[in-house]
Amino acid sequence: MLNNDGDSVRLLGPDGTLLDAFVYTSSPGSDVSWSRTVDGGGIWTTDYPPSPGMSNRPGTPTATPTATTTRPSQPTPAPTSSPSPGQPGVTTPIHLSIETARGYPVKTWVILEGQVTVPPPLFGRSIYIQDHTGGILVYLSKEEYQPLVEGDWLRVRGRLTDYHGEWEVRVSRPTDLWRTGAGEPVRPRLIRSGEVSEVHEGLLVQVFAPAVRFSGQSFYLDDGSGEARVYVKASTGFRRPFIHVGEFWSVVGVVSQYVRSAPYEGGYRLLPRYETDLSTPPLLLPVTGGIRP
Image (cartoon, rainbow, N blue to C red; front, top):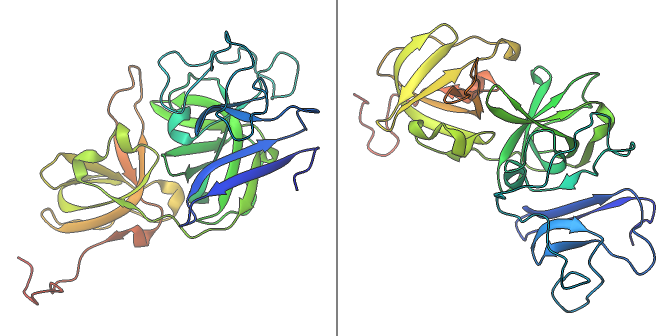
């Protein structure tokens, strides 16, 4: 039973993966329902009439969807005013998957839901969340985060922002963040060093490759596919480990981007969260027992 004065719904797969989610603050009214503009996708709307047992469809032949679940070529225009949603002149946030949200313009109000991969205060005022489509940075501009740990399900309401090349959701107050449940920590995706790039921005990944150079709080890995910069943020409380060039390292972290000036191209880096995200393999190989060269 759902409440008329606001509630939320989540659709989970057999393995617990979040397939879809929706949050509303009030009932749409008598004989009116929330629905997707496309079966299994699109955005949420109250413009479509209820259609039990049939496909979602507009109420009139001239009505058309305003967005799709894939990256739109001409996304919905962003709101032009700065107050919070609900105030006059501000567009209602669009509930999207993380990957779809990346196709919308800056200043678009969105609601996203995902699992926490970087909890506060590891990266200061920034955290990261991830759903089955992608990951994204969340920035709380003032006040403090509620207690969060890896794996927590979090619903976020804020505006899309491009900060020095990286997509983020800027949240103005802690009340725009809702912890909706606990979950198992997200497992990092194993990628090659050259894949620390836009396609994995915001995702928790793991790279295993030899070190080729180091500088300051950064060191660089390259498995032959391209260099990956590993950068240890000061807010984590630990420093870059001592590196031998040619030594193999395993690094777990989130893919971030930072470029000082436009055009914001390149600047991708791998940000470890804990000192334990950085490790060298054992000297003895587990299968052969041989000594690593």
